[in-house]
Length: 255
Image (cartoon, rainbow, N blue to C red; front, side, top):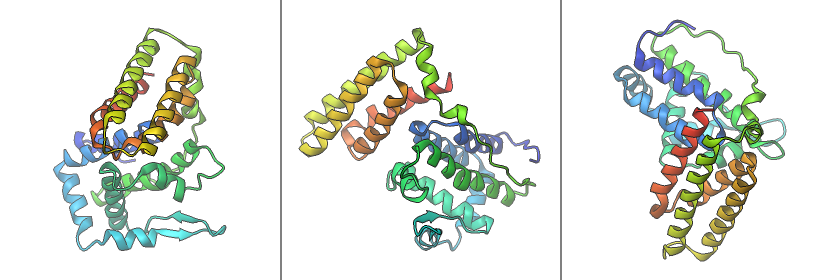
């Protein structure tokens, strides 16, 4: 990879690359970092703007949904760098605005059925985020070497944290428990939320709190993915959900 001297473009490159090492539960925060890096750079804004000229997101999104040999629908990027940039930028914007759900997208297009969600998320990063990174740099005039997909099973092993209980983890558990309790109380008092959705949220939060008591981060992460899907549309808990994602991001970044 050609050396990147511009700090803002380097920040974009790093934000995309960090997705490869991200826990799926933190993916929303990582996507926001990529978009913030683009907005912070006039060169990146101009490049994305150039790619978006005469680009029809709905049409290209439909074209990217193709059937594989098993007749399952998968997601395949176009070949042209400018179309890759425009399409993925549009996708990231949809995820960030919660008009598209990342969990559902990964499940639907990266063959999540029967596989661990972390494996499918890695496929999403390899086939969407990193090509987007490289296509953007290509449009900026950088020489991008052919990328080789690196497998990193160690990034999936959250159970290692269970073996090393310390004060930091204890504080993290307390913080998450407090936020979850605030979410639960707010949802139960929100008259706009239907009772069946409240029941689902209460069951998920109770199970998450139990996983914290057991010190099982693997189960906690899985439950928090489901919880995020359940509460994302609820305006009254968006602040608490943001705090939850920030706490998770801070914790895992320090590991």
